[in-house]
Amino acid sequence: MNTAIATTANRFTAETDSGFSIPAGYQRAVRWGANWTQIISPYLPLYFVTILLLGGFDYGNGGVGQMLEFAGKAPNAFSTIVFLDGLFHVLFFGTVMTLFALLHARWPVWSTFLVAAGIWQMIAGFAKILISAHTFTALGAAYITGDAALKAILIPVATSADALNQGLQQMDSIGVAIVWVLIALLPAAVGLPRSIRWLSWILVVALMGPDPGFLLVVLLSPVWMFLMGRWLKHLLTIN
Image (cartoon, rainbow, N blue to C red):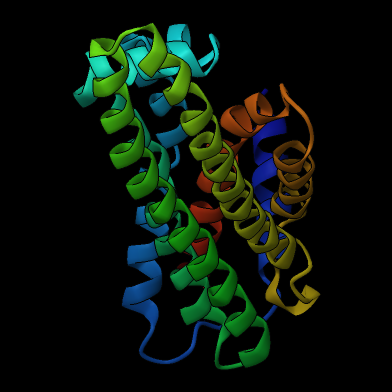
């Protein structure tokens, strides 16, 4: 087992020792980004545990009516789930900016595309927070206190709002997928390990594919972030 671990470590070192250097003056930013990326690596699994503890799965899979009941009866829990969903995109942007600091001197166009995709996914994710939290808690409060006639009116309204929310969900997912594609296609001179490249492609396919593909994103994104942070730290040791 020790031999296997040593072989893996040597392969990782060989892949990253490509002569690529961190731009002068950005060592501190890269060190911060490496630590940040590894700290947030377990975020998605913890988010799903939070949904489970707050009862979001019980209501989220029962249609628009049950979602309105959940938002109306437990607005704080509903808003927390929505907020934590969108917060991932804000946290992920820290990793994107770290890569921008690392790459912009040598590949300015590539790094600009990376930041543009990062901003896109963050804005879409944050817009999803605002729309979902305000819309569904207000509709939910009216739904649980209304009569049958009012409920019949609110269901189509909530369905339309949910369609908008799903559209924003697709937009932020596309933004994240573009970031992963750009990382997977980084020039060989960067010295990015093959493990990160392959994981990036797997995550893109899982994210953009049908359910339960997103479960694979939840399980593999911590590995991707941990390896990304380790690679960034390794660059600091050879510069």
